[in-house]
Length: 254
Ligand code: NAD
Image (cartoon, rainbow, N blue to C red; front, side, top):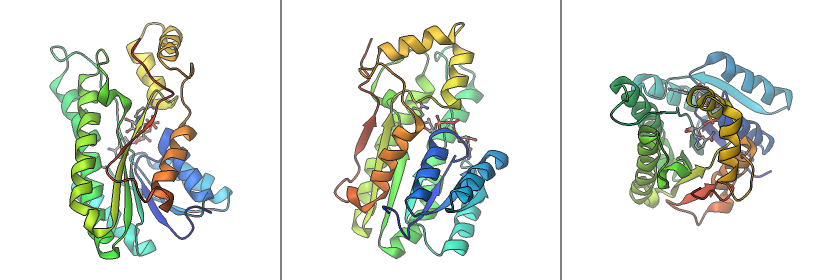
């Protein structure tokens, strides 16, 4: 098993990519700390892991709240004594052109998608530094490098995550901590479903348009990203440091 004896913390693991990754990591032998804002869905992920005879526990925290995140990390250390892998996955969407966007909506996207990566990292890093090992996986998006209409706030956050990843890597390489980013294309999850419903009159047509922008001709599945996260979490990726990993079905401008 590729994550035998590893302790992993995954934020936003009650749904979509985070949930799929939690299930896969548990199958690969990891003890999985499932975090989410939503207690019900987070506990459901844990229950599914237990049903497949894996090890997992749920810790509720809002990744934008420093006190909440610090308590989560302390509770996780209290339970498992170490954290080998942190997957900063939790995130929300953000739509609208700049001149129309509500400032509260802008702030929320920036807060969840940037501080939601910074805070868990800030509180986990001292433990990884003491262990002299660790892998942190930051969730970016291929949108960071594309100009897509109506996505200024979301694109800004995912671009920032690439810069943060490289900067963190430089600061913590000496502690044998690797920090990499994943850049998914369009992965069919509740996040994308709700984005399509709220942004398009005809979501089916929008899906076809998105598919036509991908060389694969199809949308990704949460497992496609989970396998990439597994590689970054395991020692197999030991020579990847501060790198972006694209899981986007060959997305092209269309
Ligand atoms: P999702 O909505 O299915 O899951 C996100 C989870 O994060 C939810 O369970 C939600 O409750 C949780 N969450 C939200 N805010 C939180 C907070 N403040 N504290 C703790 N948990 C919180 O979304 P998904 O599609 O699985 O996306 C996961 C990540 O992947 C996001 O960062 C997203 O930006 C990124 N991403 C997704 C796609 C895609 O096409 N689905 C593409 C690129 C990047």
